[in-house]
Length: 196
Image (cartoon, rainbow, N blue to C red):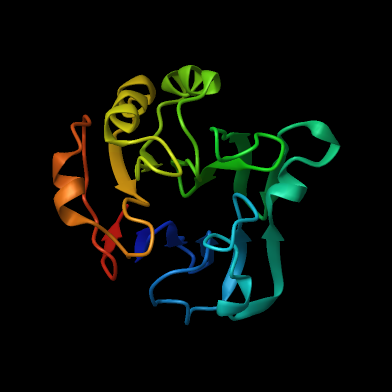
């Protein structure tokens, strides 16, 4: 069964059924031991792009916002059956020409990884895609706050909604996560791994 391990802040990793490992926005916490098959970076801020923390397999594929936005459009990638689609991410602190989210498809799952963003027009189109998981930021300082993140969760309508990136400078804020009024909420603590 595929798994999600939350490292803290905006950092997490997926393990596919076949053992392949996908990291998203490496920076915080622990759990960087399993060598990466894929590393995804949503933007260039230092709390999202510490690729050097991760051991990489010889054929590891690294996709950053630069590859994701090459040619001035949101690109898609197929890494041996792991499909990665760059989607819009933006707010007053994050330029949409330098920042993306991702929708990942593997093992029959579809997962939205918001990166650092506020609500976007493109989110309206996600509902029809029947997403299994949606992972949102919600610090209210560099990104949307809890209220807007809950609105995004309602728009997208994923089977499970997860809130992260809640307290810059800390791995997590459980009290804040508890207050998040989103449908199908799933709270995951740093250091916790869940079956998807």
